[in-house]
Length: 293
Image 1: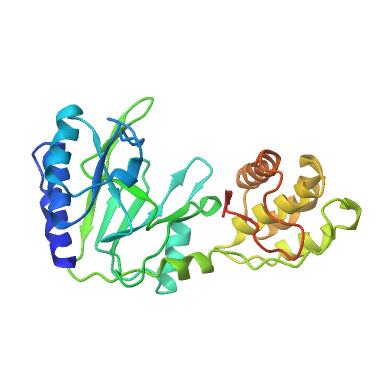
Image 2 (image 1 turned 90 degrees about the vertical axis):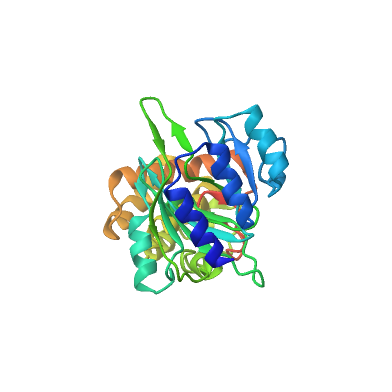
């Protein structure tokens, strides 16, 4: 299927026809597609990626109904995608550099520029080793496997001031599957054990937590700050006091003031909105990267 995918993406890269034609091209290779709102990322079908199909008749019907619909591809079946995001608070390119140095991103099938300036790296999925979707939002890196989807070229996204499309930048005729689980483990910081009951904020070793944060290494720094801030919020420490405790060690490991501010605010909101998130016993099942797992 890898050769077919390469040929399909080559055809889409040179594509001058309709969006429906591109959707049919993906489906002919075995990639299940579904329509998303024109100019946006939201699915148009009731069950979203779960409605994805390779059936030409249904695809023609969808795009007859919505000729300008964007193309969603359900990932995890033929295609896995590493998503390098770009946001106002930062981007995932430094993490991508680290993954390259660790030889964790083998030759991708394709590199696709996203409307935000990020990159989708396409990899052929291993049918004998399905990998689930996960997110490391504070690191601006996501993985799209089973249970996920991406918008595919030539889809476009319309913003407040401009429209931008998904563009295939490079293609590789000899790609290899990516180990998304290993990347997730690398980006998950090792957490200190905190056995203090949640109800007893006075016994929290906040100083020890700050010292642990000071030892965070590149690639885990933002996620470590997020996790530490969540623990402090859970123990009843207010946002200003969290800054007093964590600003200095966060700065010492190379995090800028805007990133520290945004991460602590995100932790505060996460715990306030999901008061049972994470744990205060043993460090298991924490809120990771701003997403409850």
